[in-house]
Length: 136
Length: 136
DNA sequence: ATAAACCATGGACTATAGGCCACGGTCAAA
DNA sequence: TTTGACCGTGGCCTATAGTCCATGGTTTAT
Image 1 (spheres, each protein chain N blue to C red):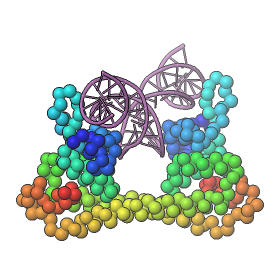
Image 2: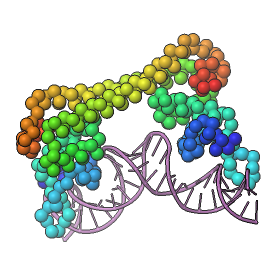
Image 3: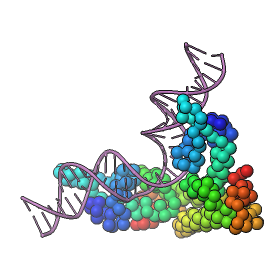
Image 4: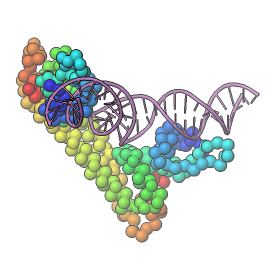
């Protein structure tokens, strides 16, 4: 099938699919015509695009996904390998969460020190809390 | 002072400071020389750069920081306002954490279904778990 | 005077994941 | 045949936060 039909079938834009082709995530074969450069997309590409969508929903980057797809092509991938990749991604996610938690706790700590907000009429440039935030 | 001294004082690279100038986060005045375009950085810029570094450690983006700095210039900022900004950032962080948790739970759910890994010699292309992940 | 350090500016580059546009040829339907 | 949809390609753009490089003039120290 051509890209338009594929786009409808997997619910991705043609531009997105072309982007994946350019990034090497999928590698469709040329069609049979000697008059045009149209690519022929098969059920293989459908499956791969379904895989990409699913992996993205797990938080994998396109680069990571491309790596896995290549391993599948070379028949290197198996359950244990995929599982390890997934567990590594979980570890990575936990790190990101920890970083975000640190941001959050920094903010909350700063807010907690703000026990007595300025009176509404306090001159703003002299507000001790604002100045404190400015590290002055 | 000139940018080299400022760079040392606030422990940021000259390129970073120039970048902030270009982005409009800080607005140093021109120096007094009629022979060059050197900018004059004062204690005001030192304070602002300290603020930027601090706000970044809370997870604020440069754009958000620029907004706050501008409000300080216009004397619009006060404790309540800053506090609300901080609380909004906390809410935003919580959303990001929730998204990451969703990724994580999706992965763990998928792994949990993988109760019986393929035997090491299982033909890889037929491994039911891999095929399942491929949404086949 | 000379060389090195300094300053400023502009532009390209990195990473990520697309989206948009122009252009030109092909294909299908009217 | 004509028109419109389709396809492919290349390049530019978005957002973010810098980093690097080239260029050219200024300042400082020898």
